[in-house]
Image (cartoon, rainbow, N blue to C red):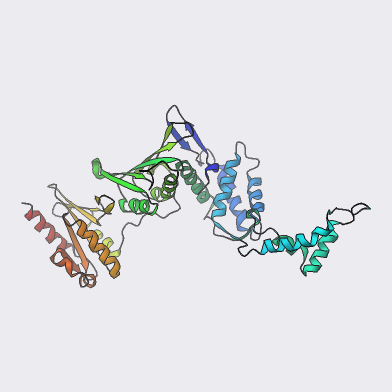
Length: 407
């Protein structure tokens, strides 16, 4: 991520909104070429210092009109984030400096050309120190300040696939920087609920969930300290959460951003259709081959009035949340959930059992792999056992029975 000092955005106090900077192919087409050249600097820059790399990136953008220094610094930060630098973690540079300075001290001041007043020429003193240490001066000079961040040398560059990918990361990073001052975030989503919840938890964001019209859900996200006092920490947590949200489908987001003007807040609005691209992969269509095979066999058309929806409902009590694998919605209005328990470790199965027990009052069908069913006898008659694939017929039989019980 970028730092707050690298953020670029338009603040519209009249309309109460903030618009982070975005480089687009329409208005900034030349930046694709710049990005490729910047990548080239790092790809061919093994052994160069961070300062040398940054200066090379700056020279690429030096003649670009209306290119602020913050934009250059932002690109350098993103390139550094995709690189590995040699770091002096054992204090060798500090030890070497003490040796060199100790040997040079009696000969100060040093001058470029010795005269009758100052008799110690810089080049001769360096050569003498090199002889005393038994190393070439060029080697000594290269290690003298290797522990200073500007003089870290590039060891490896993982990089980005191409210039367009670097620009995409820049655009997301500018939104992240705007979120550093966020006090809350609200997300409306129609898909990928499980991914949104998973990454919200990883970012340590507290959440409340409400269902809205059309089967969508509204997530209000706050940081861990927001209920106690205002803090910037949860703004950073929301920034970490953003790339995962961008990778999802069918969502829109509104964040409230605190400004430096006392009492003023601005809104930041974003959606899946706004064209941002995450470096994270999109959520998998299915969590397992069993789920995928079952969905393919069921097909898109309803069976006996039952429509199959993947991860179509969220069950929650307080901070405990459960998203079953499938939702069956009948034309009569009846809904039944299906959770597939596949081939997992004993620890995972026990955690799954505890979750199912917490929502025991919900209409949940369980499909359990035979090997797992043997370790979970508590499931008993609630489970539909399967070997390698879940049969549509057996699920339909249970759905018919459920419909009959409902009268």
